[in-house]
Length: 62
Image (cartoon, rainbow, N blue to C red; front, side):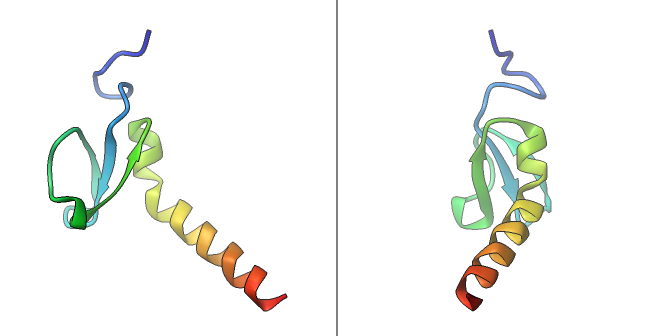
């Protein structure tokens, strides 16, 4: 069973305004990325976006 506490429960977002992971309702969707399944995944949102952008650029270059 997944705890809805600090690490589990899904519905995690990365807030672009506050530059941190937030759980549940919070800032408007226009200011956040997600949802993610965990706080750790939400915290890595910018790194994941950067990796995906680099992969897409490389794919476009081919």
